[in-house]
Image (tube, rainbow, N blue to C red; front, side):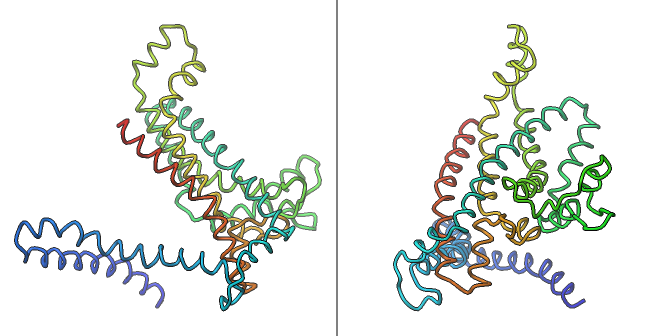
Length: 325
């Protein structure tokens, strides 16, 4: 009960306190002459945000990079020793392969499903379109921790005759032998099954953005293609798809970044065991389980090096999208 009251207070008091704080700042700015106040107001309003970003993002980032070149308890400099230890560890190479597999499969599959669902639901009529899109978007309303619990039950394997897991129940119904899916090691089958959870959770996000982009395609261009003899496939791939390319790339990069630092689904389903480990889980284990701050920080630095160029490209893509608008 106490936790519930604290949560309610945080929800109510937090926004009110923030609102009151900015009212106070605005009142203080109004005390200055009008010309001075007009110049100060943008900095006064953006200042607290910059302080929060600097204190909660920039400083920890610099600290993490520093710790990556120090020993396990951050008391002595060890140079690149932490990175050397990582790349000499065969388990870490397996982790890198898993991360590559996630990056290669999840973003493109999510975008493809998003485009397919958006295109097909747009043909259902207004009422059915809203119903189907609401159902597909529904997984976005739950966390990946909850989603991993649901799907772990679907993949459940029991040693007895009765199979609780839906997938094994289907396999058994067709005369097959139930499989311990999460412990399977056949070409990272368990990792691919976990990816299904993330694709299922992100499909609604991709569908929403891509559906809006498809609806924004001018009908005149599609009609012109039909007059020139283009069939449905040609019309989509040569007329519609090029016009929604920027949105598709934005969705792809957003899902790509979240996939590269994936943690909660894997931790909830396997804990990184059975060759499903990725960089996010590896950092958690090194820092919180093995108490090796240097090695954990090195993992984060590698992840940052991989993500930063993608983020820069994403920002440029958004700017191009804004220019087109």
